[in-house]
Length: 245
Ligand code: ADP
Ligand code: MG
Image 1 (cartoon, helix red, strand yellow):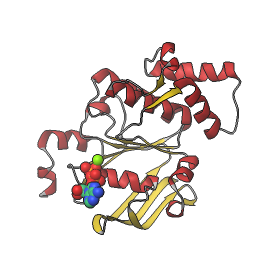
Image 2 (spheres, rainbow, N blue to C red):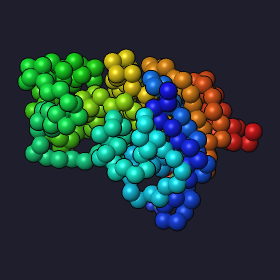
Image 3 (cartoon, rainbow, N blue to C red):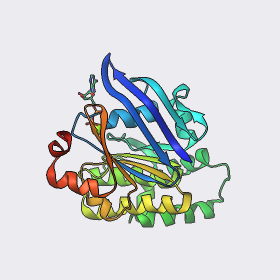
Image 4 (cartoon, rainbow, N blue to C red):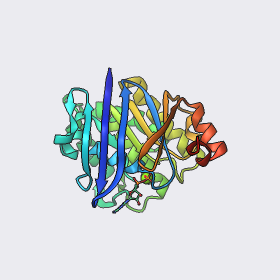
């Protein structure tokens, strides 16, 4: 069964048409890769799924049995959709531990005892090689770019979303951090049967992650679908070779 189903999606921003006739279905537990040149509309697709109100959206997006277009971003998140941000907020004064505890409480019906929550968090922090000192710091304050991204992934591991959307999370990360992100995704795929839509320019992360489908977006349209091999071909030959076909 499809977790996410997009049909004949058309998205515009300030009256400019950005996405056109997009069809995309992601089944339970599948990993899909979305590639395309800068400006192709990849982030627009991710933002439209999440419900960014700046875009005007026509067509259908459904998630499980819910039609998403009537729902605001918070309601979509509550259904189990997670989108990583390309820009990350700094909130000095909010301790990471308290923030993650709140996130867990809001996203899970079953409350954990403080001891069980600590164990829950420890298991997830180990995936990302965060040490316990980290929990005492304030949210994203004075973090490096890589730490901010790993912090986002830690939030994802606490939320345990059914659909993970990562928008160029691997850009600017070193290979160890990329492997850690992939490990986190694999953890949720295994534990929660989460589905994944990963936007990327590189095949590096795919050394650690198995892929079911790849979609190539160009000028707002999906122009090619394939399997994991397509990523390597695109990386080797460049986009232009595929756009001429
Ligand atoms: P990608 O993520 O694939 O690089 P985006 O989804 O960010 O592409 O952008 C898709 C298109 O939307 C681009 O052509 C871009 O120029 C346009 N765009 C982005 N932001 C705005 C804006 N605020 N106003 C008008 N057009 C925009
Ligand atoms: Mg983008």
